[in-house]
Length: 338
Image (cartoon, rainbow, N blue to C red; front, side):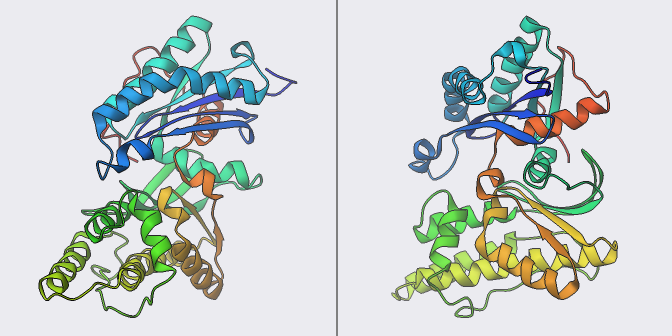
């Protein structure tokens, strides 16, 4: 306890951010330290798992110390430790899980394992203090594109998921091929602001009527074929136009399906989360379509869209409230389902 408030320390290491957040009473962020590896992985065009794991090992203790310092507390003030145990890169996850277990055992602090995807949804609780389930969740990231029905804290029913490439994954691939580099999502978003989103007609894949699933592999292939054909013909590719047209074909489908799900399930709130939730066009489309349908769009600040420890601390707090603790057998689960 610190100043009569329950203190949760959250550790996130599922991919290439070493992150530690400290949250009071589940919703008040005292510290949210993120050590990014983007500069390291950029030259490889994507995350190299072995390098990511090694960097987590090098960074984790320093990030914890920095977070405790920023929060103005010591480890003795921590009442609960939450850690991402999946999904993600197994080596990266193991660093966070081992660290959390060691701290919990050494200091006799209760431990909670957190689903990374539940953490993303929980990021909104940190910003919107009165937000409570139920609502429709839209989680869009490099590895996932999901529409879920959130019935309670950390309780989600999947309504739709990607059948192949996630939105962020497709954007990374297109950005790399067209020469924008890594990470692809922000690079596509930035280039698209200077382009004409009607310049190139790329398909919108909605699948069958009533489906909330996604498929972006065909679209990705169409864009890559377009790039190759233009290059073979000796024509210069207008990168901003391509980025804007491609982005529109992805984000329009995501927004339409999310709104459709909210209407069908008679829920007037859509909570957006995940790295791709920072995309400016997705936010704009959701706001426009949501207003027309009478649906409120709730989205976190940019810093809470990325992987962070505060969201894990928040999710852990609500698992603790239900008595859902972990023991020393907690292990990394890279294929953990939503």
